[in-house]
Length: 115
Length: 114
Image: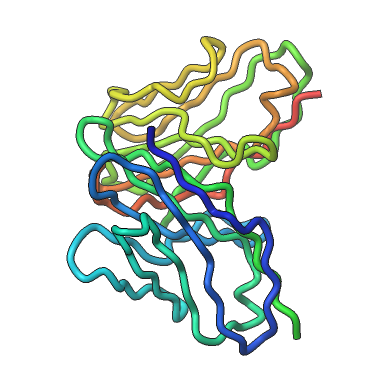
């Protein structure tokens, strides 16, 4: 069965520090992978996605993620965190084939940023 | 311009009542999805529409839940005989196609069943 695990429920980093949010997936084939961000009271916004090709993908707001097939991981990174990055982050796997493109989400990681 | 819109933004109802939640997708988007976000279960897929048909209803939690889409546009999610465990934020998303397309999410409807 398809699943996504985000091992860290809550992370706190200092402003200006680097960030890595972990994501591991279980899927029977090469997955489509996504990172979404949800700010308080806001909808989900796509940060970046991986479908194929270069395993290092760049997204909005200075985020990047690296697909590692051998580790079944798709970790999100940012070199220098800003206070406005405080939000909840969701990793997701996208289904292929005749299931359409439904997303299977991890439980989310809440990011707090210390001044 | 618009993004995905959902109404109402908040809904409080009594246990046993029926509720209807509405989603207006981005114009031209053929695929539409409903998800549910709750404290205990996280973000869960409910149903997927391609045009007016629903090839994947596998996420609907019980037969009290149903959804339809008309004119390839607006979708309504109906919950009959609501229960307290139905309390959640119901999110709608749309995309140009299905696989490989970015899903754009609406702000959600927060449902509270008393």
